[in-house]
Image (cartoon, rainbow, N blue to C red; front, side, top):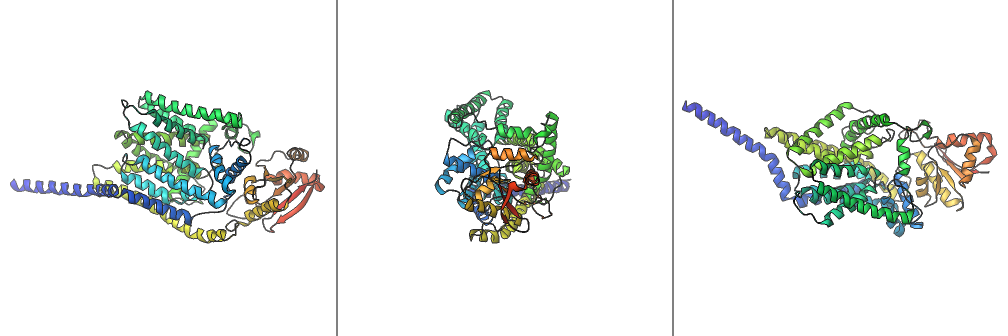
Amino acid sequence: MKKNKEVVAKKSNTKTANKSSSETTLVKLENFLLKNETIIFFSILLVSLIFSVLLFDIKMSEGNDDSDYIEGAFKLTKDFSSYYSTKAPLYPIFLSLPVSIWGINLPILKSLSILFSLLNLTAMYYAFRKLIPYSILFAVLIFTGINSYFLYFASQTYSEAFFCFLQALLFITIRPILIASKEDNIPIAKYLVFGITLTLLSLTKNITVGAIAAVALYFVFNRDFKKLAYAFGSFVVVRGIFEVIKSFIWGSQNQFSNQYQILIQKDPYNASKGVDDFGGFVDRLFSNTSIYIGKRLYQILGFVSPENTKTNSGLVLITFLFVGIGLYFIFKNKARIMQFTFLYVLLMAGLTFFVLQTSWDQPRMVLVYVPFIMMIIFYGLYYAFQNTPALRSFVFLIVSIIIIMSSLIKTADKSVANLPILKKNMGGDIYYGYTEDWTNFLKLSRYCGDSLPETAYVVSRKAPMSFIYSNGKSFYPIYTVPSTDPDSVLALLKENKVTHVLIASLRRNPKKNDGYVINTLHRMMGPVGQKYPDKLKLVKQVGTSEPSYLYEIKY
């Protein structure tokens, strides 16, 4: 009997020793990160900066919106009271400051996005440090800092890097409000800073109405109506002050008016198809969830090829399962900032998927929420399997390492591929890296700026890009076919004092020259040329394969 007791005791001691040993895996990691957090954090910033330089892209993207922001900033420098962007009013206002000093200097303007990318990492670090385990925080920071999708926007003048920084800043400013007890007296100044930050965020992307709802819901769920009143009140006051100032400078222009009309249409490029009803928006919610969670999220993580066009409902279910696990432990541990993080992601991403046109299938639409989605998932993995510490350590570490290494490999490959292009661009070949269709279009845009008189007003399908590469010449934008009736087209162009039309052969499939082009201007001007051949005079052709043409209109 004594022998049996000894055997039981030995087994018990062995289990205790094994449990202690396995538990120390994450504990040791946590202690190491805590002890060396400063040097690790700055190392992440340094590595991210190095990759940002290696992936730096001096060229403007074919997406056009980044050029649009610069054109808006340029117009503001010429007449601050004449231009107000309805897409993201704050970003062009900010860009107008460096544009007023250095002009349209793309390396400088794009370098600001690197700065905001690094500031985003810094703000995230200070927003969440000491409130969640360092293993989770640094896993998210490393992933964000080395991921090629985030680094892409670190050298573009899209608003994503700017927005990510303000988004992280929102978490910094709401942090002291969240962690304070109901009985604490929070200084009004902290609410005011929060109100300013939320206002800045709301002026950067219209979808920020979801963040406002997340703030309200968080305090309602926690029955903390005093904080709700002060937080919401501070935002209303600050935003109200801005609206008063705006009315004096820009009049009654509405931030939401232009995008609202496009969003409610069934087809964003064809208003004649009518507007969507509630059922149509619900369909968008499910379709966009499949697109952005079942495809784009996993492309960003590096597990699905960027060329893949199919969605995967299985990936959506897997993501929801992991988010559900994270959510369980977030509420079990009463992690306040993580509760707010979940509500923020749920409402911001949910509203994005609800209103977004499904044809606007771009990674950047979900990219800004990915760090927080990963934080929720990592949180669940960190606290799961607590009764089996060895499995807990293995699952958390292996998933974290796989995700980080996947991003690192993709970023390293893209860095190697980008270096020859960067070298050529820095050497003065500003078109190197574009496909031939874009090269011809941009060269002809430059010709318009260099060779046409100042009074010439040229139609362009990508007017902001033509503006950039013509060194600041304004172009008349046409994105949809206003009419195919020759007389109506000529009347429209004459009314807007258009003198020329730039018709390019921009590929419909950017990766392949299959003969199909973006034919908006072809369909618009083709009937004019057929009915009135003498009214269109060819002025310049650039390129023989995928050429671009410049026509003068003879009214």
